[in-house]
Image 1: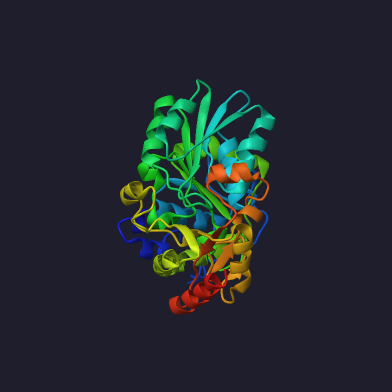
Image 2: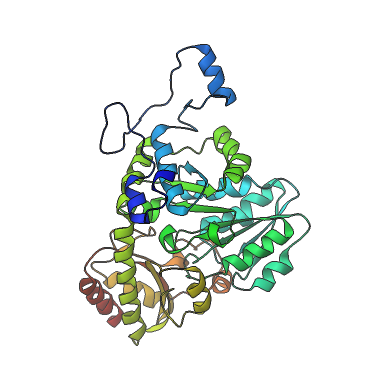
Amino acid sequence: MTKYAHLHPETRLVHSGGLRSEFGETSEALFLTQGFVYDNPQEAEARFDGSEPGFIYSRFSNPTVAMFEQRMCALEGAEAARATASGMAAVTAALMSIVRAGDHVVAAQALFGSCRWVIEEWLPRFGVATTLVHGPDLAAWSAAVRPETKSFFLESPANPTLEVIDIAGVAAIAKACGAKLIVDNVFATPLFQKPLMLGADCVVYSATKHIDGQGRCLGGVILGSREFIDTHIHQVLRQTGPAISPFNAWILLKGLETLPVRVERQAQTATHLAHIIAQHPKVKRVNFPGDPHHPQADIIARQMSGPSTLIAFEVDGERAGAYRFLNTLEIVKISNNLGDAKSLVTHPATTTHQRFTPEQRLAMGIPEGMVRLSCGLEHQADLAADILAALDSV
């Protein structure tokens, strides 16, 4: 990683984390193996007690996975990383690695449905209390702190509302009370936002999204300081086994090579479409981090170097209007995934957040007419025509 540390992200994403075999391959090698052999029992002992570096078992270490982890460190500016089988494996492992029975977690209320389930349903099963707060309100974070608070968790921008939280502000509150701040940075991507530089202790990604970006595989990654990863994450992943396949890690490595090109193009398209969508008479409101009228525009200007590839907007007619819009689209596909080369759209109230009551969804900022659009790599004019025709039908 250090060899390319002084270079631009685009260069690091092509060259960092390389580990060539004796054959000198151009593309990263795929080490599709479960285990590794040793020359003698002394070498095996040294690997297991950590006195000698090397790979032991692909459940917790593998050369291809290590290349992906090192490349993510180069991109994020992190000292260490551990890959996981999915984004939710990364979120769950990061949270559970910090807390134990009797501890307390504070989290933003606007979260992806599965993340909120882990906070509200899973952690309390093990004696961990949780409190949800309005993320942009720093006073709410401070008021929620207890003596036993050990972790803060947030998404910024949030899924699906694109609400933005002052990461540096929350990090300062966490540091003051001795809690660790975990940030899910999927919607901003590591290209547009650096939570570790803003004071976060840990960053998590669903690599399934922009990092793969072509709908091929699942993956996740946890990043932080060497001390954080070694103290909190390493043994949890080693002993519990949410391991990523080396094949998936190899796909994600190849995805990272084109990440800047794809995300830049998708963000340009999102900026173009957000402006067009906002002008349509059938649209009640638009939430997009590139919009100067975004409710947290001042925070965005401080902590993000670019917008998102996603747009959240509310159409007339509640659920029926949203369904009419979705059913009329021809190019944009209905899917709950995001960050893909294909433009995708979903209705959060009946998909990613369907388990919540209408009152809970409204508190999160998810009305029945909201749709979440993930902009792909299609031509802007084709997407604009498709979306405008669908809005006209509402």
